[in-house]
Image (cartoon, rainbow, N blue to C red; front, side, top):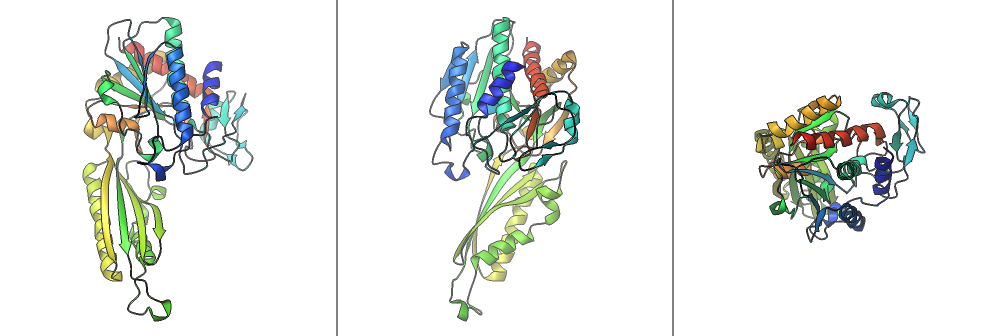
Length: 397
């Protein structure tokens, strides 16, 4: 496990927090992502893989098979979320973890799953940033598995690995070199709790609302002033509070007001919508449009709406994933790793591939509390994820 730990600590030393405001203006959206992608490119080349890294800024590594079997791929992303500070990570390695809460510089991590790794190695940040296990743990697991596979001389089919930028901004698969892909399926290593296998994700949509008001001197505003900020705020207040991410779990979808900005004259509002059913997703989009129409009439504001489906549920678009999933569970059984199937309350880069007919189940990394300063991961869980990747490769023969 020493080399796996070293890889992970190396990768989280790169500042790769993504910047949604630069989507469409720069790829990757931040320089640190490019530096890590170049580092991964160099690592793959040093292992002897055929590597492509072009203008799409996706690293593709190809390892020619030495035995017959369908080509399979593995994928992870290099960027970290901007929801909390993701740069300047100062990791702490807690060896021989004794149990109980972990006290950091600014917070206490109390998670019942920590007890599963008593006596093991827990890695956290110092509490002032996230850790970056989402998804540098996935990068480390894939790279470690490929390194071990080559060193062992074990039989394997054609293997492809992909490292993508800007997954957290939703633009990670822009210009993805899908025409180069030989694989019949692609396993994303971007999951959380140990044992989780995800073949289903949310359908995702973004609704952007532009509100135009009518500024008037406040002293003479009665009957004339139309405040765009007030109208936009009222739209947010009309979203059902019981259908928000903080109020739902399981298979319940939600509305999430992501941002609101502007002034009396003009305001911009973005709302994210999620649901496992595409039909229900569209119904939610229509519900937002009805709310906007009602507020527009009530406040005499001019409103325009732009809605976009950003990703689809993998199960709905590539339902024929039985063989891809079968390899995972057969490998887990042989390795003695307990696995269970669940659904992602979110999306992955794999959703884009699934929409193009390439099954892309998501495999755990062992990380917890992603996108927060209390993020943590157990080295032993990463090790078992690495073993599972190698087991899946054996099952492809």
